[in-house]
Amino acid sequence: MKKAIVIGATSGIGKGLAKLLADNDYKVGITGRRTELLELMKSENPNSFFIQTFDVTDTKTTVEKLEELTAEMGGLDLLVISSGTGEINNELDFEIEKRTIDTNVVGFTCIADWTIKYFEKQNYGHFVGISSIGGLRGSRQSPSYNASKAYQINYMEGLRQKVTCRKEQIFITDIRPGLVDTEMAKGEGLFWVMPVNKAVRQIFRAINKKRKVACVTKRWGLIATVLKLIPGTVYNRM
Ligand SMILES: NC(=O)c1ccc[n+]([C@@H]2O[C@H](COP(=O)([O-])OP(=O)(O)OC[C@H]3O[C@@H](n4cnc5c(N)ncnc54)[C@H](OP(=O)(O)O)[C@@H]3O)[C@@H](O)[C@H]2O)c1
Image (cartoon, rainbow, N blue to C red):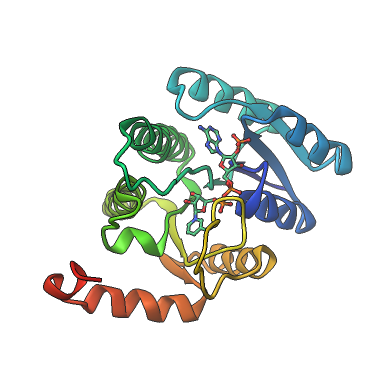
């Protein structure tokens, strides 16, 4: 059986993906801060799921828990970072910005680095990060969220360049979803919100194909292309 870890598997995209991986004969390590939700998932599929509770912003504990989890599972082929946070922050409340950066930048980097070093030791592996189409441009409503997703996109490109130069059998997949119907996508006026199951199936397909970058869905890929083309002078007034 292949072995995968999904960081942020207690809800939304991470939970859906963890279940789909388990249905496809993976042993899956699932993590998050809400232990009771991890235990519930394990009780529904005790043979496939392995659980560890930790907060990704606590980087020391994160590394210890990842070591424990991989030892318990007997190795690692695939790691997906789906943990993330983002809030509307029109008032520029610094606590919100800091929480976003600690989770999406500091926590993300700690896990990505640990994973790549683990894969480099065994000379194979697949790292997947769930970034966002939001990372392609800034946002007046949630500046730190979009900036943190831009960081993830850029960081994964850097990691890809690193492993490609060393000709290792290590793959990096950057998944960029549009709006998905999860706890995170709340608010008025949202459009083209896709069901979690649909997003997760497309993400699973992109992982199997070892895609470098995948926008989910294709429709959102179109938005991504248009977003990148909008001149700054026009974008600033939108
Ligand atoms: N939904 C969308 O429209 C959308 C669009 C583009 C990209 N994304 C990205 O997709 C990813 C998954 O989000 P989602 O939509 O599935 O949202 P979600 O349902 O809120 O899931 C977020 C997950 O991250 C975990 N998490 C958050 N902060 C954490 C922390 N400090 N330490 C450990 N785990 C933490 C949560 O677990 P606990 O609360 O149990 O810790 C939860 O499992 C995120 O990176 C998000 O930015 C979402």
